[in-house]
Image (cartoon, rainbow, N blue to C red):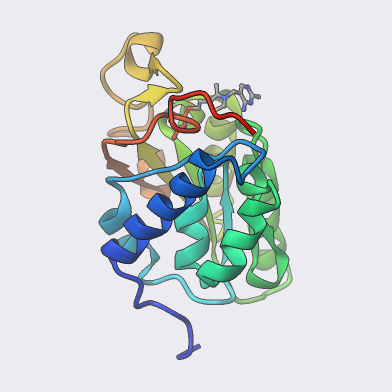
Length: 207
Ligand SMILES: Cc1ncc(C[n+]2csc(CCOP(=O)(O)OP(=O)(O)O)c2C)c(N)n1
């Protein structure tokens, strides 16, 4: 798997998101976009062991995950221009995303179960936000994956908020539920501050 692209820099990622913001501002994207920043180096590091045969499941803000899994910036931009930013899918790259909170946890665990049962190669990576990681389906999925030793890692990307709601205040705890539990061995957790709004640009766009 030596041809797998790994050389995308923080600057290239920042420029990609900024270019998409310009297109959105100009009214060229007639669908939601969710831009992210501050997580670039974390994601570059997390993607280091990820190879082509691995699977990526992510949600509404997945531009950076797609780039790091080897989708070309041109192909990604085209899909975004076609209004698919919120649920990007590249089956040829084993990438599936959804705009529905929690929807992919069971799918990702099922994929990992299939890999194990069929003796195939590959690891599944499910990316989720901090609020997504507090949902019941996420907890059940991590529990099942740990108990059956499935080839899956869960990545929790904590920007502190669910849209504009403070996630920790919502659940009455300053710590994620899995901290210092046996489940944390299945989870890669990092914190970041997103300089973009949750969705769009925080301004009215006229098409
Ligand atoms: C089932 C469902 N309920 C509500 C929403 C609306 N929604 C979209 S993103 C989001 C917040 C998720 O927060 P978090 O998991 O922390 O993600 P991030 O901050 O990284 O976007 C919500 C409530 C949705 N997409 N799906």
